[in-house]
Amino acid sequence: MYIKHLSLLDFRNYESLELPLSPGVSVFLGANGQGKSNLLESIYMLCLTKSPRAEGDREVVRFQAIADGGLAQVTGLFQGSEGDTRVQMDLLWDASSGEGDGFHIKKRLRVNGIYRAASETVGRAMAVLFRAEDIEVVTGPPAERRRLLDVLLSLLDRRYLRSLQRFQAVLEQRNHLLRMMRDGQAQRGELDYWDGELCREGSYVLARRLEVAARLSALGRECYERLASGERMDVSYVSTIPLRGGEGEEDIRQSYIESLVSHHDKDVAAGATTVGPHRDDLRLRVEGKELSAYGSRGQARLAAVAVRLAEARVLHQARGEWPIVLMDDVFSELDPSRRRQVMGVALEAEQAIITAVEGTTLDDLLLERSLRFEIRSGRVFRVGQGPS
Image (cartoon, rainbow, N blue to C red; front, side):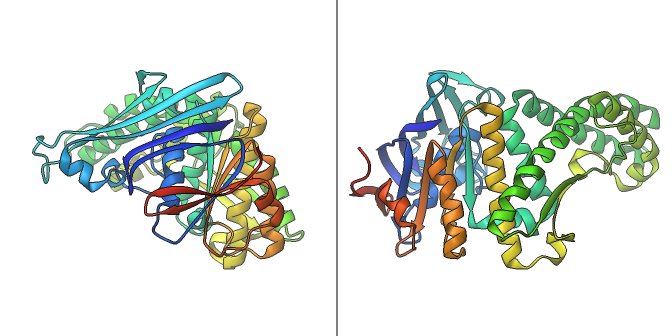
């Protein structure tokens, strides 16, 4: 899969951009703050509907566009095994809403000209984003690792995204009820319904996470061993629910309901649900030592790269085509041999879009086989001749 054309209107620091793209490798060079990361962010948002770094949609819209009460737009035309698919995302706002400082942004999504919900849009185009900040997947809180699994599974399984959304909505309702019970404003019997709903959605979420974590473990171990000269990395899913009966969905549901009931008193006292997929973690170990606690920064950096490499390979195996590989300044902290390993994935994928700060050393083979561009203040210039 690859993106054939990218159009930006008032997105981040891009006032307007029409950028034709090709299969293979495209390298975008530029100084910091010129818009390299913003370019990759726009492609990622077309695939996942959400920014990998913004807290809200307002952050991705040019300020002048907000002040003028106009339209921000990101449009991508993708080519995949099923033919052309136009994925269009529109960001709209009403300056007269009077909300907060007077600005309100409403996001709408269109696929082939038809408005769709996010759950119907995610996964039509696939991308994996490598960033320097990926080290947080290893060293950061469990929420970072859960997000990795949720993004991967949302690209693989539309039902998963719907189940995850319903699970989060039910969890919020159950937690509200628990706080009311703690304050003496609700009865314990009211938990039964929400326990059942939480288990129904959460069991599917957990079953699919366990399955994809096993794939990530096998592929991640292979990728890490190549990067780290034979050191062994293990990836395992850590569930807060004791899975006594097995890892099938029905077995998980039974274990889940038993665990919820046994934690009623604790949950009421905490005013929150203390067990379930929202409290789980993905454990990464190198040579038996947990990376989040005992790993060096170098090991954590390599593990983060290995997990992203594994993520791309999981999508390739499951969907029969490569995701678009987006690499945002990931080479600066890698030595030459490891840089070549990562660049090998860029050459293997159907399309890789790479950003780097001017002066970054890139492999000669990669440069010979790539289209090269320069980004300056939100404008893109072709600076070299690549393959025809």
